[in-house]
Image (spheres, rainbow, N blue to C red):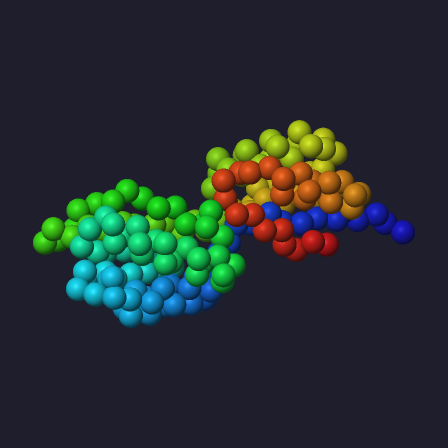
Length: 164
């Protein structure tokens, strides 16, 4: 009987429908709340960015306070949202953009690869586009790698998929 390698992929993905649902819930609350009336507060979003517009920085931070619990409730990791600086907008308003982080970039993939090799030299690690594949003949080694990666903070939300 031939021995085959077991493997899994480390990915960083955001469930985009859940992100949209959370933002829609936040929009409804902001539209209905008395303290946001007349401030021009609104949320614009694409799958890559979230843009908040409001009359002042105080209302922007209030909008973030409305959005983040909804993201958490919808199981969208807050690490996947990278807030930028407050910028001036038209007619004295302000805006703030956030990037939705999807995938693992090359630098982070190298960091993850180096960390995994430090945990167990016998596992094979390969970077494939925006994910990292880890394989080994021993499933125990893979489970040890998963545990170690979960305990280490790489600054982005990681999921483990395609465990075979």
